[in-house]
Amino acid sequence: YMEKFEFESAFHYMQKALEIRQSEGDTRSIAQCYNNLGKNYFYQQNYREAERYAKMALKLGREIGNPESIRISLKALTDIYDSIGDVSGAYDAFRDYKKISDSIFNAENIARISQLEVRHEFEQQQRIFDVEIKRREAEEQKRKIIYLSIAGVLFFSLLTAILLIFLQRSK
Image (tube, rainbow, N blue to C red; front, side, top):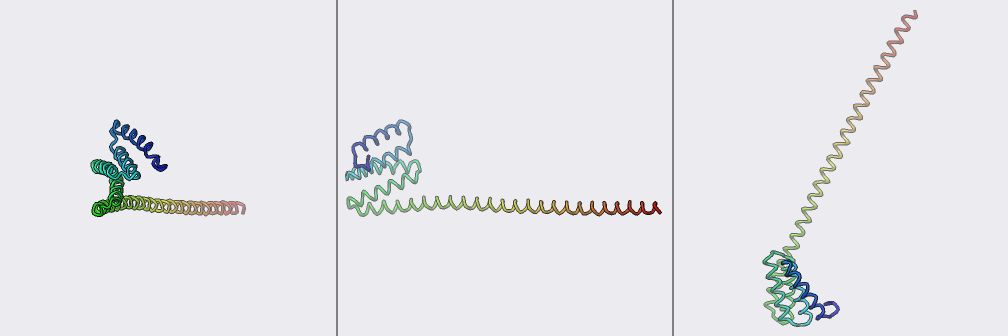
């Protein structure tokens, strides 16, 4: 409803969502509801209420240690202070917003790098395993060839011996 500029309907449903989240004790979602309510007031240019809800969301986000909620709240406060001409407040909120955004970005990159390292290590171990299997298969094939060669030589030796014995007896 907010995107359709139906702020009263948006407010109504956001309030219902907030009541449900509060009854469930879902602090993370409560912070999200506060951020949404603040955004709704911001779009209506009711900056005092927008600031109040953004600060409530920021407080909850910090209490539960949710960096994404903190980031959203600080971005909202940056926009609110910028809109009312509070340069100092906008600067402070933006500075904190930038720090937490960089921190989230770095944490995500560290997680991606760790995943890549694990995948690389796994693939490397898989290649080593595959090479070892091929080496063992080649050794087994070589052994079979040697055994067959020995068996062939023994067979022909036995055949030659039998033939010689047969020739000796026929004389």
